[in-house]
Image 1 (cartoon, rainbow, N blue to C red):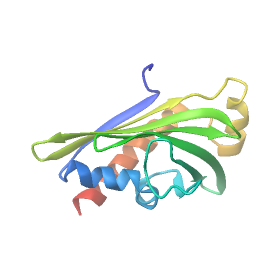
Image 2 (tube, one colour):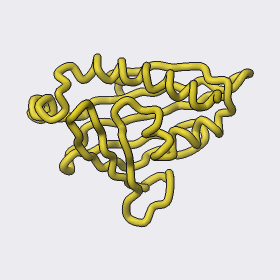
Image 3 (cartoon, rainbow, N blue to C red):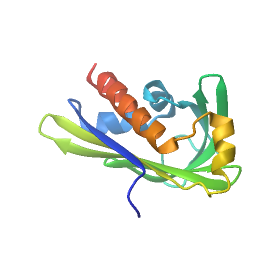
Length: 152
């Protein structure tokens, strides 16, 4: 896999399994995420398992859009999912969780998989012209909120 388009990490003073539970729980992820507002498991899935799909609703100000994601990794060290919009691959999001002496280190990464022709249309829908910079800021804010939620 190529290098991510945006990535950041944070040390969290909480057990790795607790952090995994937070990022792999759709309401928990929505509480700490900058754009992901809510999610619903699809096809009878009840939680994070490889192959499970969920519909995510994302929000940026007054703009909202939905995607369908498929979980690709769901173990205590990684939660990751591939995102599609209208059936087209648009991104991958990944949370790597590495135990440390005082808790764990969480690395959030994303890869932009949008086809070139779709990018101008997503700018209209989301209001974001520089997705890479926007995602980098969002990841940093999300990790700060994740740290606060896990440590409280």
